[in-house]
Length: 170
Image (tube, one colour):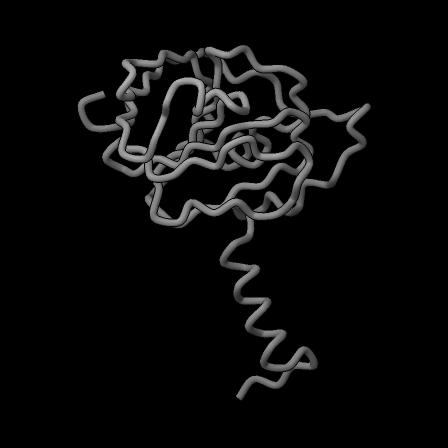
């Protein structure tokens, strides 16, 4: 039996927080003063991505974060994002995910995407600098971050299809 000064309730809370924690290593990124925040440069080249909604296709040019470091830093410290831009976070395998907004200065819509390219769930208008975990509520292979409120403007919903080279038929 494991003995711990935090007790059974504390162990349950610890296990839950580990399950909901941001990507491994991301918690090591220190909080920064928003006035002097330093993130990663724009990830190039930009790639085309399309979300097919009931209203029609929505086209974006996205940065692709497909390394551990790129995923950890994501959109941290960015001060603006054009309405047709975004960042696509690609993970090595489908999994339950939870994102947070540490050092993120602008509101974002966080779109969790299944391995087959369909939208799993959407977190609308994630608040800047909020460190609460925002879970995928299911297994996702990728995450698209776009300007806050954009998903609603475009009529984006769970079940919509994301077209990009990483998804079947993309």
